[in-house]
Every structure is written in C-alpha cells, then in structure tokens.
Image (tube, one colour):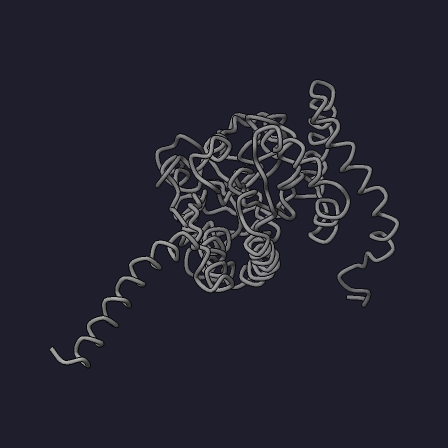
Length: 357
C-alpha cells in the first residue's frame, strides 16, 4: 500500500469518524416541537396559517427549529389542547382561548366579544392595555404560555335552513355556536353546543343541529354548510374580530434559546397581520360565488333584531359577572379600556358616505 493510498484511507477514516461524532451533536442542536392544530391544514386562514407559521419558523431558524404541524385529532381531540399542553404531552397547540371556556368562562374575552370593537382596539386592549396579562395570569397556574397567533375579520352570524324573519323565530332551534355569543343565543331560546369544525357538517346533515355559525364565507363554504343551509345571516355581531393563540407548555418554552423565542414571536406577529388582511380581502369574492352558483341568500338582521341580541348580551354580561369573580375582573377591565379608548375611537368614527343619495 502506497503512502498516498494510506494517507487517503486515513483521511477518509478520520472524516467518517468526525461525521459520526458530529451528527448526534447536530441532531441535538435542532429543536423539534409538536404542534397540534385545532383546525385542518386546508381550512382557509385559520388552518392554512398554522402550516405557514410552521414553515416560517423553519425558514427563520435556518432549519434548526422545527414546529411540526399535526392535523386535528392526530395527537389529541381539537378541543382538548389545554390539558395536553399543560401536562407536557405536546409542546404546543394552534388553538383559541374560546375552546377553553369549560375551564374558565372568562377566557372567551381573549378571542372575541359580542358587539366588540374592530381589530385595532381589540388588539390594543390585549397587547398594550393589559388584556393578555390577565390571560397569562390564568395560564401560569397551569404551566402554560400563549402568544396571539392569528386574527380574522368579522364573521357571519349563522347559516339557516329557512329564512328567519325575526329573533323570535330562533326559539327552540338547536345550533352550533361559539363563545360568549352562545350564551346570548341561549337567552333567546336557542339550544347551543360547541362543535369542532370537522364535526359541524355531519351534525347539520343529520339534523342534530338545525343551524350553525362557524366563521366566514371562505371557511364555511369549504366546510359545506351552503349545501344544506341556504340562508346566511349578517352581521357577525358576536365576532367582529377573532384572535387566537399558540398555546405552549411553559417548561418547553423556558428551554428555548432567546433566538428561538424571538423566532416564534416574530413569526406569530407576522401571522396575525397576514391572516386578518387575507381573511378580510377574501370574503366578497366568496359571497359573490355562493350566491351565483349555489343559490345562497344573504340576509341582514334588522336593527330591532340586533337590539334584541345586544340586550341579551348585556344580561349575560351582568349575570356571569355576578356569579364568577374572574369573569367580572376580566369584563370590567375590558369595558374600562373600551371607555377610555372611546375618546380616540369616537372622534375618528365616520359614516360610509356623506354624499346625498
């Protein structure tokens, strides 16, 4: 064996040994998280944004931080993120505070509020006015950390099989409804239940529910509601803006480097703006299509109907505040911020047009 051959073999051996030694170190350097999504990857805005967030984390980290997306139910049922993340069964969930109201009814405020403000004021309360600090105090008791993950534009207020000529006709209906709005509907005689997105169509088809709300035309038509219920009502008085969260196990969060924490924060900040603008932009085309191709009738509640919804909301607010100190604490904080903000908000309010018709 020549000296050159021996040298080449020795060099190859050293290289292989180095690769074998280095590979585990590289593998350890890469951080891998599991993220259970409450929304399917093909569901516009709220599901597609989760996939986009996962990809952005990979891009921003140069492939050294993976947050793997899992479809609803792949690891845990969509509505059971709170306990699974708290226990550390998974590191994170792409979900919404409104899905945890069985634990704390007050958490509903951090997703959306009936007759609530537009996105600027709502995020102002949450991110700068102390709203999210109240949320964080609740989550800290359970080893949880959350960051706002996406926001979506106003929703519809429901899909109905038949025309609803007044709020009085809602009495006796069975309806899928979300958040604090569900309690308002109960006040009006509606039997409500919270169903995950994937379960709604089947419940509607089988007559388990008579009507449903979920989100907005782009999402609702993807789920097929328009095939059964042809009357789509507006405005979405119960959800004028909706903000959701990346729910994380605190121990897992604390183990992250400052850089990886920053990557999550930056990617989620971008996601919040992206999803709101995308969702707001996409609806007029979806509405035009379902009216032209599917025979959907777009309906608007009368002012009298909206007044009935608002009156019922005021009753829910008073009753829940009277029996739940935490609910009252969050509600009072939210209402106080709205009162202070009105000095600015009211001064900027404009009519759609000032030209005579």
